[in-house]
Image (cartoon, rainbow, N blue to C red; front, side, top):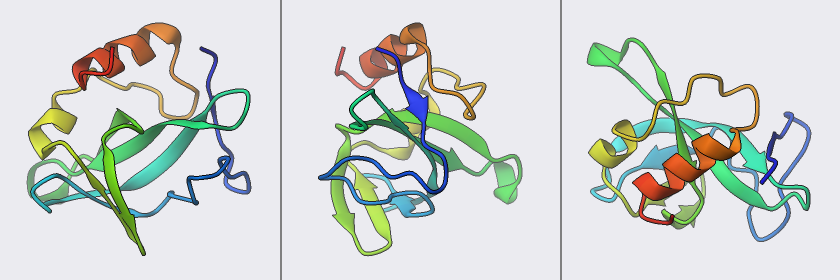
Length: 116
């Protein structure tokens, strides 16, 4: 499926609100960081989010592609994932968050989270 990264002034189709800059918590309510980018299909349906994590002592932020299915809760200013921090950090490498993930990246990521 062809996906695009939404620009800052673009928003996904309902039911998803604007999630960029929202705090991301894992299934144990541990802070990961925030949502950096949103990836939608041709109908602007949200398919993946780009979740940042911080490296050792807060250095070296990394981008992690996460399908929307693990988003368990959305509240004011935060989303909670239905997976733990280790699952997010072990996901396939997401090298270029400024373009939509190709089909191979989408497939590998969905399989990693058990949605393949």
